[in-house]
Image: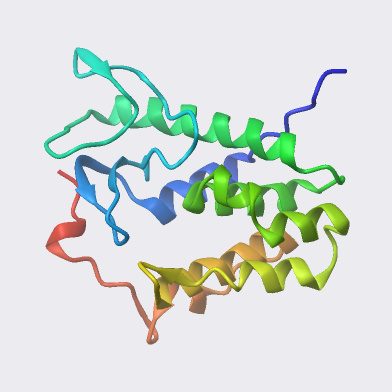
Length: 188
């Protein structure tokens, strides 16, 4: 029997890129993991490997790594495809495209291993339309062991994605203003 692999929608791919932001220089994220491109942090079991900048890349961002936008695109595509395959294998109930997109957003942020071990997956497989699924999404509001407003907002946006409802502008803003961009956030 062949497993059907669902795909993230084009709008979800775009949202993920917006959430992650593009960084061509490797940096340490809020939980201490080297990250590059659009959130490529190698938190998944089989991270993308291949040639980057003319040398073989082992799948983990590291200090000093610099990539091109085209290489960031390639890593993003490989990461999303891995997540799509993994999530499709783990979800045993029938889900809508918006529900799958919400799962993809979760897995991109936290990785397939955490999704595999989560109560969220249990709730989705029991009844993907249950409010308990949204409650599980909202339990994931910490980074580095601390509650973080930006993580809470992403979880709330994820609930809208999962439900297929528009994301209120207020969830994209902090204290009524767009999130501030610092010098560390600028793309080189």
